[in-house]
Length: 121
Image (tube, rainbow, N blue to C red; front, side, top):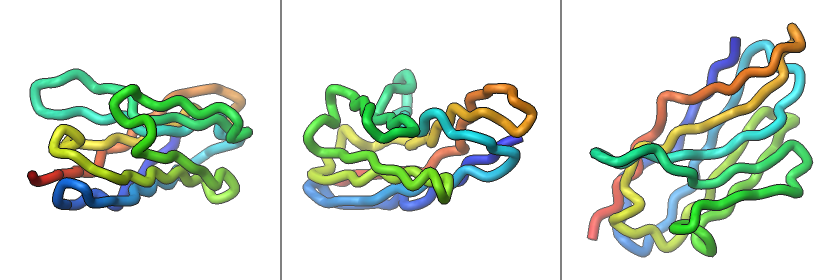
């Protein structure tokens, strides 16, 4: 089993910045990909950003491109999300995601409980 723990969510004013962190723990052999998705009240969960093991492939949601930056330290099983120029529409619960190869050689995807980001106007 794998657990994901997010941190860094907060209340911030429009135009401000936040940095989210997520650490994966458990029976991990290899992390294939980690990332962030978000879900606002009454809306579907949407892609924020993902990053592959090599770090060469990064994918961003359209609404965050140019404002958010994803990075990783898979040696520490961690992924980060630097969020700049935050807007009220960025308000959501941000969930960490991991696609991992377990020590049992099974591949699974996991989700964290989420961290709340609230942007006031």
